[in-house]
Length: 251
Image (cartoon, rainbow, N blue to C red; front, side, top):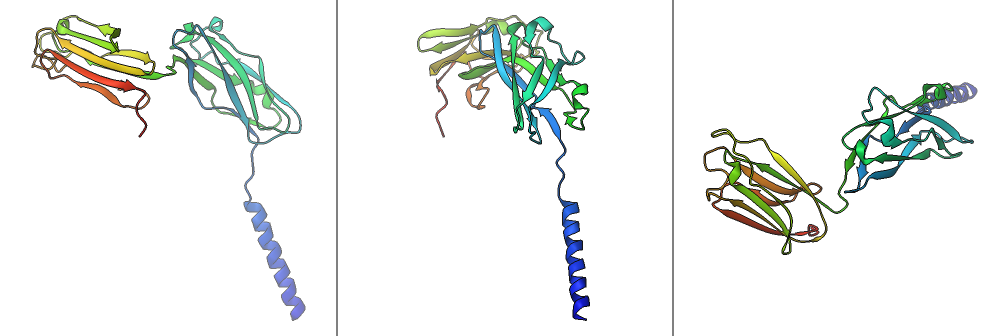
């Protein structure tokens, strides 16, 4: 009886271990690009160069080389606007590789879609289902601000100025007159500003503001990165003035 009990215990333990092994996760070999994103340009730059990452779920004892191609169906940038290497290498015993991509400023506002070549994945390794989508865009390295301006019917009465100290760094207006009683479409103005002390001033040349019954005019000056509002309004008389400093103070 004791031998039978020991045998049953042994068989039960073996069954348990077998179930444990069956439930262990299986890592599928997979190669993919980093996430889609913005391909940043500094303001005024004619070219930009960035390192693009490629990731693997498993390491290998030897270098792995994967060919790179541009997906023509999803790409709107022209071949003269980018320099893409022919391949990317994931070094031996590593799960990460990278390649250098250079783009020209003429590509800003367009899209570059980069993919792997299917023939490099005949060994059972899977590749990312979608290509890497990159959107070239000017990225402010300091303080990225935007002015959102919605004019009422009398756009010719609106003028604004942005000062750093006593120097005017940006200005706008007067604008055109719109349809009677109708709010005009929103205008946006972007500023990449160094640290400093600033003043935003907005004028209504008639003296009744931007929201006096002839359309609902308004303005908003905000930080794109932090969301902080520096100037906002629409209902005033002849002028509003707002002072602020950059960068935003730490909380």
